[in-house]
Image (cartoon, rainbow over all chains, first blue to last red; front, side, top):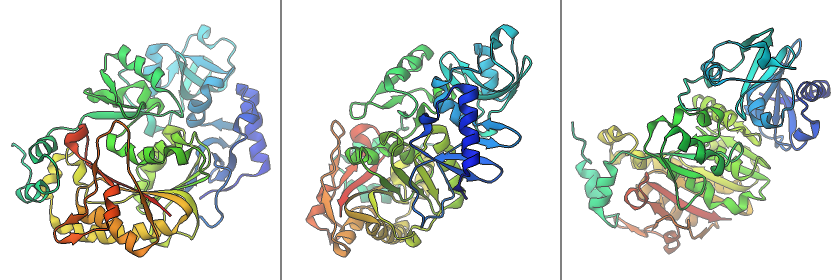
Length: 152
Length: 304
């Protein structure tokens, strides 16, 4: 079940996305924010008829706990617009990420990216979310999305 | 074991199709793999060269520039599949949203009445460029999970997922509705030929009974002037033309000609086993496997 998102959670999410990834709040202005269980923030259509009891709507874009955790759904959708805090993976690590494995990357691959949730890219393709800790990247790809990719 | 078309099936549909030997031969031939480029995330122009690099042969269809066929079963192991840039989907399943392509450019409210697993919902969303609102409903709760997964993978933002028995759906009004009705699925025997072994004409009556209830309810949910697409993936006239004939008798519905440029369709029939349907039913259409090397499908375009 979903309900309207609080103004505070909406603003926390938008501020985080702008600060960490350079995503302008206007990018999401055509959509509405909703809330679901366990701090889930959902981006969905502006209009939902009040007589409906939706199971869900739109996309899960983040979870709010101690910090904001962006979803892979969101990062895949807007990844091309992300200006900072991404790591471009080599082919071998891209395959490992899509398989669901954690990664070790060289310090040179990290560059200016700071610790925390990062977008992982392969070439120009936004693969999804990882948690950067030093040179270790914890895989945040949902289990259902993991595949043994053979062509990339 | 060599699979054969059941004798009663062959006898029944030899009367319906234009070229029975070609029809039955196609029914026993495996269905080509196909996919649709998800334009919320990619374009045909960016996806096609990637497949060329992979050495996976693909061919664009003449009737839909985002639809491709392939002889390679590895489509699901590509980066594009992982990213949701392509959606593996049977060709005929792409037809219903194409029939309302122009309406989707401006529609604010769209109902996908039997939405799971989401092939058509994600296509509707792509054709709407994530604008407006699609209510994606399915009565079976266990089918909601794959529906949600496919919506997420495709980057669909404008869908609302509901789990109503359509017959008790809240009274609302939609500009466009799609009823891809549950059916006996004869048109996808090419995908899973073993289903032919359990084919029985006894299944038509209960399926048609439900379809008649669903089409009346969906029509009632349509705004005046709105457009409803009714489709099934079966050949049985009881579940197709007879359902449309029933709607025409029960409601002030108008039919519009079903046409897809560069895709061969057979007009809906107006007589079947001692039954005569409203002449307007000939404006509906059938996709037959031997005409375009696809599964089988039925399509009707209805105006309120």
